[in-house]
Image (cartoon, rainbow, N blue to C red; front, side, top):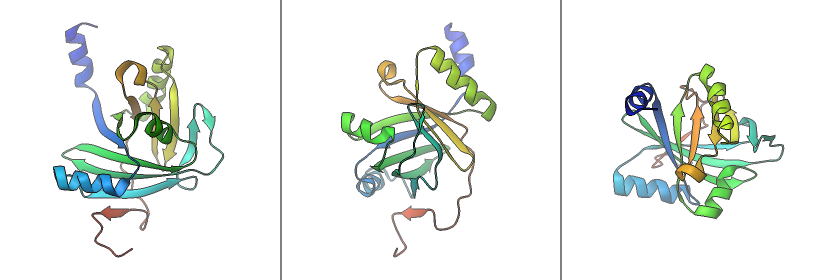
Length: 176
């Protein structure tokens, strides 16, 4: 692509999120609040009852898993922190291999573009590492780390109203 074609192509794209991996979610959130004044954080637990169709390396996960996420918004940009707890996901493997820090950048795509984009990446030799669905949110992590030094996530990024009690806000003001 020429520089002009790259500019035109990228003008239509939406980078939605950046995500860090941690082994201590509360410590990491507190550091973001104290150091950067970034927060408050919506904290949720994901497991085999709340996440549907989890696949790692193309294979359905049929054993228990759990990970915690925290999300906040700065302007119109989302920041996510993930702490793996147990079970087969790409998060613990990445944390063991690289330690805490940048894990992925996520691009928002329409539902109809999501499958096409996954196929395009796979045709370039970039595998799908993990996919899953949380309510209507569908996402796929692409194996871009060898070429760009982080994982690239694509997803539809819909607004989701989660059931009451599924989210806590950090810094915690409740007593739970």
